[in-house]
Image (tube, rainbow, N blue to C red; front, side, top):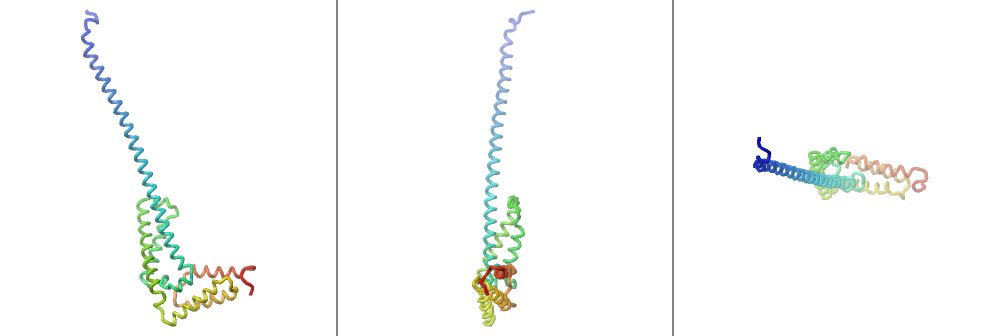
Length: 224
């Protein structure tokens, strides 16, 4: 039986096999390292994109909510101000197609507006709400433009005289310098003049009535 030294020639093929394994293991480990780095890069990019999209969506949501509020504020100038409404009575005349379209669009947009703005992060919900606000704004613009063009031209001369009397009476009813009795009487007469002519929103009546009621409180208003 020969000594180990007799098989010295086996060192070369075995060494080659071991070296090949070592190289493959090193290559495999390097590939895993690169794959982990790439995976982390992809995850970081994905997180950054999600954050960008969320921020963009919130910006769009804020802009749409603001636009909704702005159109509502323009409508409140009519709904809460009886004197302005007398000047442009078409804004509450639902017999007019433009007025009806605007009021329907307002109801639709209001219905789609959630209490929590984050609910609009859902793409479908936001798209529906954004489109509804756009339709509301467009419909309001059209109705207001026509109302300001017509003013009181749809009324007869006699009816326009009643509207003018009502406008003057509303001014007295809203005048803090007038006595409570004067304001109450002016308000009642104004409502009589407007009866059958224009639709007075409850909000406009309530606002004026509250101001008159406040004048009746002790220490409020001018002594009679």
